[in-house]
View 1 (tube, rainbow, N blue to C red):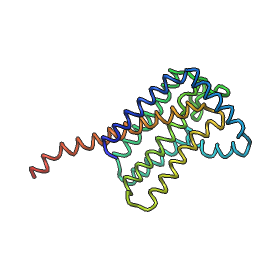
View 2 (view 1 turned 135 degrees about the horizontal axis):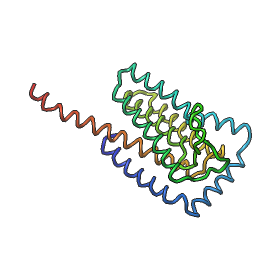
View 3 (view 1 turned 60 degrees about the vertical axis):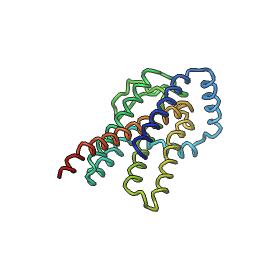
View 4 (view 1 turned 120 degrees about the vertical axis):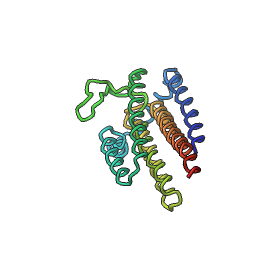
Amino acid sequence: MSQVTYKRLCIIAFLFSLCCVLLIQQDVIKRIDFLFNQWSYSFSNPMTDVFWRMFTILGDTETLAISSILMIAFLLWKKKIQEIILYILMMSSGIIITFCLKIIIQKDRPGDVEYIDFWGFGRDIISFSFPSGHAVKSLLLFGFIIWLIRKSYPKNQYTITLTILLLIGIVLCGFGQIFLHEHYLSDVIGGYLVGITIHSFSLWMYYWWKDRRKQSTLPYRIAK
């Protein structure tokens, strides 16, 4: 995908995210959230809860921190400094924007009140429902891996398979929060839209910076 494609995707995702933010307090959306939440209880039992928890743990903050350390170590081993900077900026932006939206909108969760708990830090800060942090973080993490694989191995026979598996992981990680009664449907959809916006904006800026750098060195190459 080119810089122009990511730019268009970013604008479209941002507009849909804005619409989602404006609509979540409307009675129609509340009704849909309530009905979907009630429907999810019909699938709730100890076995399915374990299944969903297997995937939603991938979106936990502690898991993300460990995954990020491994990701940065791998990129450092491959000497991909630009990709390290991209990953750090993408993930930190996702965490900050998600936190700010939660504080501003303050939408209640379907269950009990939950608090931010990152290895003992932030236990007094309420973690509101919108947007779903699991949806945002899983999309950014797996989305970055998909982009990195397709960029590094575009013609590899396993690239499509890995892409599909990672996309399934994104879906299960986000929607698992609904079936665990941690979030409403609109929280997860909103989280995906926010994640797509941040992901596409980051790659838009990445390719824009690459093009500008290439253009700035072009006269020097011609002169040589």
